[in-house]
Length: 477
Image (cartoon, rainbow, N blue to C red; front, side):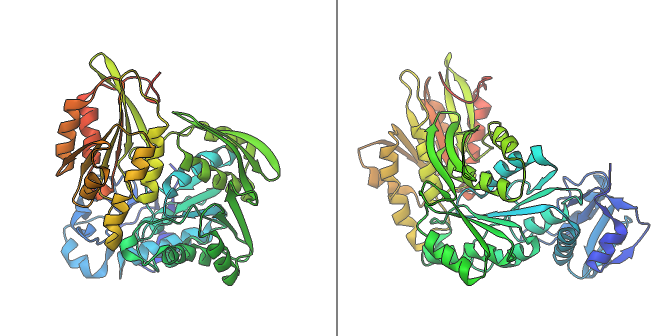
C-alpha cells in the first residue's frame, strides 16, 4: 500500500518533535482508536467528552504505527512505546497537516455549504467526478472544526478532485475552515431556517454561509441557488468580497444551470436541464425534488472543474439515498410488505418539507397508509413553537394518513393538527417504535424524520430488526 505521508513530511508540516523508532510513513490518518488501522497515524485529539490520549494504547493495539500527542500529556504515556510526534496542540497539528496537504495538492477542489443538502450534494459530486479521475471526499458529515482538517490531511497527493463539506452552527465557523480548503469552486445549496436558535433571521444565516466565499481567489467560481430568496443578498456579498465568477442554478429562467423539466418518481427523478448552453436529460438515481435542485449545482461544478460532463450524467443514475438521508427499505409484514424511508439523520423546517414531499410522492399499495414519524427539530430557539406548528400544512398537503410524534418541542403539532389527521404522541423514540410495530400493515409507507439528537435512528433499527428485508428496497408495485 502506498504511503499517504512520509514521517519526515509530517514532522516538518506540524513542527513536531520525533520520539522513538520511526516508520518510513503512514498509510492513513485516524482520530478514533477503535477504527485506527494497520499503518495509520493516530492523532490523540481532546474532544468535548473524550481525550484521545486515554486511548493511545488501544490505537496501537489496533495497528496504528505512529502517535501524534501533546507535549503536556507525554508523562502520562510512559508505558506506550510506539513512535510519536510530539506537538503543543494535537488539533492544531492536524490543521497544519491539512494545510500542508492542500499546499502539495494539484487537485481541483470543490467546497459545499448550505442550510440543507450539503451531504447529498457532496455524495453526488463524488459519484459524478469519479469517472474523470481519483476523487477524495469527506467521509460521512465531517464538516466541522476537526472533520475538515482531518479530511484535508487524508487527501492523497494523487487525487485529481477534492470535495469538502463545510458546516456551521454559529457565525465565524466556516471562515477558518474554507481558508484551509481554498476551493476552486464553492457551492451554497440554499439558505433556510436551520440553527435558528443561534441567529436572528435568515439574513444572518446567509451571512454565515457567505463566509465560504472568503476562501475563493479571484479566479474561483461560486455557485448560488437562484430560486432562493437570499440569492440577491448573496450575489451582492460576492461582489463585495471580489469573487470573480458567480454562477447560478435553479428553475429561474436567468439561471446559468437551468432546470427545464422534472419528473419525480418513487425511486428516482428524470430531468431536462440546460448546462453550458446545451439541453441534456439526466436520471438521478435517488428520489426527491431537493436532489434535483442540487444536481444542477453538481453538474455546474463538474463543468467548471473541466471534468467529463457526459460521464458525470451517466454516473448520477447510479446514486442511492444514504442511511438516515432517505434510504429506503422494503420490509415484509403479514405476507405483504411496507416501505420504510429513513430520514432520521437530521431535521430543520426545509428538510422536513422536502421529506414530506418525498412521502407524498411515494405510492401506497392496497389499503396502505402514508405514515409520518416526526421528532423535534433542534436548535430552533425562540422560533421552535412556530416552526413545529407550521408543519401542519405540509403534512396535510402530503396526504398523510397518520402522524406519529415524539419529543418535547414537537408536541405542539398534535394540537395544531387537531382531528384532521390521526395523531399519536409518545414521550420518546422507544415508545413510538413499539406503537409502530403494533399498527403497521401491508401497503404502508413510513417516513421517519427528526434531528439526530432525538434518537429516531432507534426507530429505524427497531423496525429493521423486527421485519425481514425484501430484495427490492426501492419501491412498491
